[in-house]
Image 1 (spheres, helix red, strand yellow):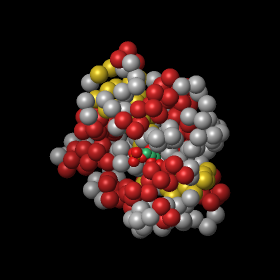
Image 2: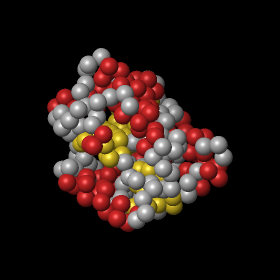
Image 3: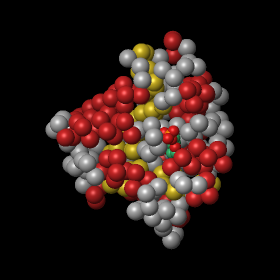
Length: 249
Ligand code: GLP
Protein backbone atom coordinates (compact mmCIF):
# COMPACT_ATOMS: atom_id res chain seq x y z
CA UNK A 1 0.00 0.00 0.00
CA UNK A 2 1.47 3.34 -1.07
CA UNK A 3 0.55 6.41 0.96
CA UNK A 4 0.85 9.96 -0.28
CA UNK A 5 0.16 12.84 2.08
CA UNK A 6 -0.80 16.23 0.73
CA UNK A 7 -0.91 19.58 2.48
CA UNK A 8 -4.68 19.98 2.24
CA UNK A 9 -7.90 19.02 0.48
CA UNK A 10 -7.08 21.03 -2.63
CA UNK A 11 -3.72 19.31 -3.13
CA UNK A 12 -5.29 15.91 -2.48
CA UNK A 13 -7.91 16.62 -5.14
CA UNK A 14 -5.28 17.81 -7.60
CA UNK A 15 -3.14 14.71 -7.10
CA UNK A 16 -6.15 12.42 -7.50
CA UNK A 17 -7.26 14.17 -10.69
CA UNK A 18 -3.73 13.89 -12.08
CA UNK A 19 -3.75 10.15 -11.44
CA UNK A 20 -7.05 9.71 -13.25
CA UNK A 21 -5.83 11.85 -16.11
CA UNK A 22 -2.58 9.83 -16.39
CA UNK A 23 -4.63 6.63 -16.48
CA UNK A 24 -6.81 8.03 -19.28
CA UNK A 25 -3.78 9.24 -21.21
CA UNK A 26 -2.10 5.83 -20.98
CA UNK A 27 -5.28 3.96 -21.89
CA UNK A 28 -7.96 6.20 -23.45
CA UNK A 29 -10.55 3.40 -23.37
CA UNK A 30 -9.90 2.56 -19.72
CA UNK A 31 -12.56 1.59 -17.18
CA UNK A 32 -12.86 3.96 -14.22
CA UNK A 33 -14.53 2.99 -10.95
CA UNK A 34 -16.03 6.12 -9.42
CA UNK A 35 -17.16 7.15 -5.95
CA UNK A 36 -19.54 9.66 -4.41
CA UNK A 37 -19.52 11.51 -1.07
CA UNK A 38 -17.99 14.91 -0.31
CA UNK A 39 -14.40 13.71 -0.59
CA UNK A 40 -14.10 13.24 -4.38
CA UNK A 41 -15.99 16.44 -5.27
CA UNK A 42 -12.73 18.44 -5.50
CA UNK A 43 -11.21 15.78 -7.77
CA UNK A 44 -14.24 15.94 -10.07
CA UNK A 45 -13.95 19.76 -10.19
CA UNK A 46 -10.32 19.46 -11.26
CA UNK A 47 -11.20 16.87 -13.91
CA UNK A 48 -13.90 19.17 -15.31
CA UNK A 49 -11.35 21.99 -15.40
CA UNK A 50 -8.83 19.75 -17.20
CA UNK A 51 -11.52 18.84 -19.72
CA UNK A 52 -12.41 22.50 -20.30
CA UNK A 53 -8.73 23.26 -20.83
CA UNK A 54 -8.57 20.36 -23.33
CA UNK A 55 -6.07 18.48 -21.18
CA UNK A 56 -8.20 15.34 -20.91
CA UNK A 57 -10.52 13.49 -23.29
CA UNK A 58 -13.00 11.08 -21.70
CA UNK A 59 -14.83 10.10 -24.89
CA UNK A 60 -13.66 6.49 -24.85
CA UNK A 61 -13.80 5.93 -21.11
CA UNK A 62 -16.25 3.55 -19.43
CA UNK A 63 -17.33 4.21 -15.83
CA UNK A 64 -18.82 2.12 -13.04
CA UNK A 65 -19.97 3.76 -9.83
CA UNK A 66 -19.59 2.03 -6.51
CA UNK A 67 -23.06 2.33 -5.11
CA UNK A 68 -26.55 3.78 -5.05
CA UNK A 69 -29.28 4.17 -2.45
CA UNK A 70 -32.12 1.71 -2.79
CA UNK A 71 -35.49 3.28 -3.55
CA UNK A 72 -34.27 6.62 -4.92
CA UNK A 73 -35.03 7.43 -8.54
CA UNK A 74 -32.29 8.74 -10.83
CA UNK A 75 -33.66 12.28 -10.75
CA UNK A 76 -33.91 12.42 -6.95
CA UNK A 77 -31.40 15.08 -5.90
CA UNK A 78 -30.01 12.82 -3.17
CA UNK A 79 -29.40 9.90 -5.52
CA UNK A 80 -25.86 9.10 -6.59
CA UNK A 81 -27.06 9.22 -10.21
CA UNK A 82 -27.91 12.88 -9.67
CA UNK A 83 -24.64 13.51 -7.83
CA UNK A 84 -22.57 12.12 -10.69
CA UNK A 85 -24.43 14.08 -13.36
CA UNK A 86 -24.13 17.23 -11.31
CA UNK A 87 -20.45 16.95 -10.39
CA UNK A 88 -19.01 15.25 -13.46
CA UNK A 89 -21.03 13.82 -16.32
CA UNK A 90 -22.94 17.00 -17.24
CA UNK A 91 -19.62 18.78 -17.76
CA UNK A 92 -17.38 16.28 -19.59
CA UNK A 93 -17.58 14.04 -22.65
CA UNK A 94 -18.10 10.56 -21.17
CA UNK A 95 -20.60 8.85 -23.49
CA UNK A 96 -23.89 8.25 -21.62
CA UNK A 97 -24.01 4.64 -22.83
CA UNK A 98 -20.68 3.98 -21.12
CA UNK A 99 -21.82 5.31 -17.72
CA UNK A 100 -22.93 2.68 -15.20
CA UNK A 101 -24.43 3.25 -11.77
CA UNK A 102 -26.48 0.59 -9.93
CA UNK A 103 -30.19 1.16 -10.44
CA UNK A 104 -31.61 1.89 -6.99
CA UNK A 105 -35.12 1.77 -8.35
CA UNK A 106 -34.94 -1.72 -9.75
CA UNK A 107 -37.78 -4.19 -9.31
CA UNK A 108 -35.42 -7.12 -9.07
CA UNK A 109 -32.45 -6.30 -6.87
CA UNK A 110 -30.71 -9.66 -7.20
CA UNK A 111 -30.78 -9.48 -10.99
CA UNK A 112 -29.54 -5.91 -10.87
CA UNK A 113 -26.58 -6.90 -8.67
CA UNK A 114 -25.63 -9.91 -10.80
CA UNK A 115 -26.02 -7.92 -13.99
CA UNK A 116 -23.75 -5.18 -12.61
CA UNK A 117 -20.91 -7.59 -11.84
CA UNK A 118 -21.36 -9.23 -15.25
CA UNK A 119 -21.15 -5.85 -16.96
CA UNK A 120 -17.92 -5.01 -15.14
CA UNK A 121 -16.45 -8.37 -16.16
CA UNK A 122 -17.60 -7.89 -19.77
CA UNK A 123 -15.87 -4.52 -19.82
CA UNK A 124 -12.67 -6.36 -18.90
CA UNK A 125 -12.58 -5.17 -15.28
CA UNK A 126 -11.87 -1.84 -13.64
CA UNK A 127 -8.50 -0.23 -14.32
CA UNK A 128 -8.61 2.22 -11.43
CA UNK A 129 -11.20 2.35 -8.66
CA UNK A 130 -11.63 5.57 -6.70
CA UNK A 131 -12.74 5.11 -3.09
CA UNK A 132 -13.68 7.41 -0.25
CA UNK A 133 -13.96 6.01 3.26
CA UNK A 134 -16.67 6.20 5.91
CA UNK A 135 -15.91 7.22 9.50
CA UNK A 136 -16.47 3.55 10.36
CA UNK A 137 -14.03 2.50 7.60
CA UNK A 138 -16.71 1.44 5.14
CA UNK A 139 -15.78 1.46 1.47
CA UNK A 140 -18.57 1.85 -1.06
CA UNK A 141 -21.40 0.95 1.28
CA UNK A 142 -19.66 -2.14 2.68
CA UNK A 143 -20.36 -1.69 6.36
CA UNK A 144 -18.41 -3.38 9.17
CA UNK A 145 -19.00 -7.15 9.44
CA UNK A 146 -19.42 -7.64 5.70
CA UNK A 147 -18.05 -10.74 4.14
CA UNK A 148 -15.00 -9.86 2.05
CA UNK A 149 -15.88 -12.17 -0.85
CA UNK A 150 -19.12 -10.48 -1.78
CA UNK A 151 -19.82 -9.13 -5.25
CA UNK A 152 -22.38 -6.38 -5.83
CA UNK A 153 -25.15 -6.77 -3.25
CA UNK A 154 -27.77 -5.05 -1.13
CA UNK A 155 -26.75 -3.70 2.27
CA UNK A 156 -28.54 -2.40 5.33
CA UNK A 157 -26.92 0.92 6.18
CA UNK A 158 -25.50 1.37 9.68
CA UNK A 159 -27.18 4.01 11.83
CA UNK A 160 -23.84 5.86 11.99
CA UNK A 161 -23.65 5.96 8.17
CA UNK A 162 -27.23 7.22 7.87
CA UNK A 163 -26.48 9.89 10.45
CA UNK A 164 -23.25 10.90 8.67
CA UNK A 165 -25.10 11.16 5.34
CA UNK A 166 -28.18 12.88 6.81
CA UNK A 167 -26.52 16.23 6.10
CA UNK A 168 -27.53 15.80 2.45
CA UNK A 169 -31.21 15.15 3.31
CA UNK A 170 -33.86 17.29 5.01
CA UNK A 171 -34.33 14.82 7.86
CA UNK A 172 -32.69 11.62 9.09
CA UNK A 173 -35.91 9.74 8.27
CA UNK A 174 -35.45 10.52 4.59
CA UNK A 175 -32.06 8.77 4.44
CA UNK A 176 -32.64 5.39 2.82
CA UNK A 177 -32.02 2.34 4.99
CA UNK A 178 -30.61 0.21 2.20
CA UNK A 179 -28.26 0.56 -0.73
CA UNK A 180 -26.77 -1.44 -3.59
CA UNK A 181 -22.99 -1.53 -3.44
CA UNK A 182 -20.12 -3.19 -5.21
CA UNK A 183 -18.88 -5.70 -2.65
CA UNK A 184 -15.30 -5.83 -1.49
CA UNK A 185 -14.92 -8.88 -3.77
CA UNK A 186 -15.77 -6.67 -6.75
CA UNK A 187 -13.62 -3.77 -5.55
CA UNK A 188 -10.56 -5.96 -4.98
CA UNK A 189 -10.65 -7.16 -8.59
CA UNK A 190 -9.82 -3.61 -9.74
CA UNK A 191 -6.29 -3.43 -11.13
CA UNK A 192 -5.54 -0.26 -9.20
CA UNK A 193 -7.28 1.32 -6.22
CA UNK A 194 -7.00 4.96 -5.17
CA UNK A 195 -8.52 5.80 -1.79
CA UNK A 196 -9.00 9.45 -0.87
CA UNK A 197 -9.49 10.79 2.64
CA UNK A 198 -9.57 14.26 4.06
CA UNK A 199 -10.13 15.65 7.55
CA UNK A 200 -9.53 14.55 11.13
CA UNK A 201 -12.78 12.58 11.32
CA UNK A 202 -11.19 10.02 8.97
CA UNK A 203 -7.87 9.70 10.83
CA UNK A 204 -8.83 6.65 12.92
CA UNK A 205 -10.35 4.85 9.92
CA UNK A 206 -7.15 5.54 7.96
CA UNK A 207 -4.95 4.32 10.80
CA UNK A 208 -6.97 1.09 10.95
CA UNK A 209 -6.85 0.72 7.17
CA UNK A 210 -3.07 0.84 7.23
CA UNK A 211 -2.14 -0.80 10.54
CA UNK A 212 -5.28 -2.57 11.70
CA UNK A 213 -5.82 -6.29 11.80
CA UNK A 214 -7.45 -7.30 8.49
CA UNK A 215 -10.98 -8.08 9.56
CA UNK A 216 -14.56 -7.47 8.39
CA UNK A 217 -14.97 -5.10 11.33
CA UNK A 218 -12.76 -2.71 9.36
CA UNK A 219 -13.88 -3.16 5.74
CA UNK A 220 -11.08 -0.99 4.31
CA UNK A 221 -8.41 -3.16 6.01
CA UNK A 222 -8.82 -5.67 3.17
CA UNK A 223 -6.96 -3.18 0.97
CA UNK A 224 -3.77 -4.34 2.72
CA UNK A 225 -4.06 -7.44 0.54
CA UNK A 226 -4.51 -5.57 -2.74
CA UNK A 227 -1.31 -5.43 -4.82
CA UNK A 228 -1.71 -1.89 -6.13
CA UNK A 229 -3.47 0.47 -3.74
CA UNK A 230 -2.57 4.09 -3.19
CA UNK A 231 -3.97 6.23 -0.38
CA UNK A 232 -4.04 9.97 -1.06
CA UNK A 233 -4.60 11.81 2.19
CA UNK A 234 -4.52 15.30 3.53
CA UNK A 235 -2.50 15.98 6.68
CA UNK A 236 -5.48 15.70 9.00
CA UNK A 237 -6.57 12.31 7.67
CA UNK A 238 -2.95 11.15 8.01
CA UNK A 239 -2.54 12.60 11.50
CA UNK A 240 -2.45 9.23 13.31
CA UNK A 241 0.12 7.72 10.93
CA UNK A 242 3.81 8.08 11.55
CA UNK A 243 6.01 9.91 9.04
CA UNK A 244 7.73 6.68 8.03
CA UNK A 245 4.40 5.30 6.77
CA UNK A 246 4.12 7.77 3.90
CA UNK A 247 5.64 10.09 1.34
CA UNK A 248 4.86 13.76 1.65
CA UNK A 249 3.93 15.66 -1.51
C1 GLP B 1 -20.91 7.29 1.54
C2 GLP B 1 -20.45 6.59 0.26
C3 GLP B 1 -19.00 6.20 0.33
C4 GLP B 1 -18.16 7.38 0.82
C5 GLP B 1 -18.60 7.75 2.21
C6 GLP B 1 -17.80 8.89 2.79
O1 GLP B 1 -21.36 6.45 2.52
N1 GLP B 1 -21.22 5.44 -0.04
O2 GLP B 1 -18.57 5.77 -0.95
O3 GLP B 1 -16.81 7.03 0.81
O4 GLP B 1 -19.96 8.15 2.12
O5 GLP B 1 -18.32 10.11 2.40
P1 GLP B 1 -17.64 11.51 2.55
O6 GLP B 1 -16.62 11.58 1.46
O7 GLP B 1 -18.76 12.48 2.33
O8 GLP B 1 -17.05 11.57 3.90
